[in-house]
Length: 202
Image (cartoon, rainbow, N blue to C red; front, top):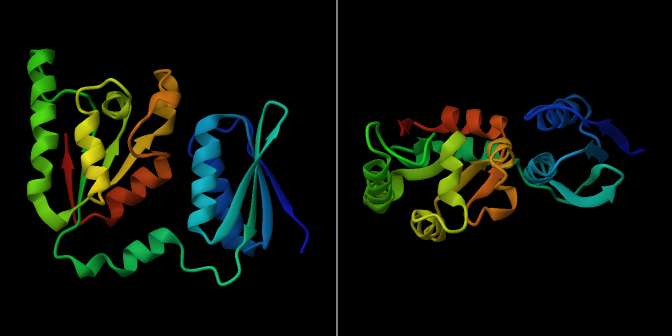
């Protein structure tokens, strides 16, 4: 089968991933080449194709990247489908949705200390804690030099999934300073909220 080319340059998040998703659902191509023009889209499409059973390789092109996906032999079920299939294994699957680097309003210094204490206490949720999703100002928690970074790294080392909004990192100029979690897109954010049995919004 010939390689399918999807030109997603100029499309905002999460359109490159959604375009790839629709094409895979429609025709399940053996190979496809997705053209994007920014770093978050490169990371998001690469990770999505891998989750769908493709071996993904990134090639630089003028003004962006080409993500070449070829279906791997004996490809397993997509990652999110696997997550759905095991959803019943735990009584509760908690997603923590963090939208700022502080907790509460009134004093940002106090709010920062509260966030540090909050992240330090999350392990007390035990096996029910599944995923952290960081968006908007919350992405700053995952960048080098932030007081909360070490807490996130400890959570990640313990097997907690951490997703960091790529559009938000790019907006704040922090894309190359992320030191915890995976760069993500809005499709992953929505899916994380859908699959969770409980969401804690901070």
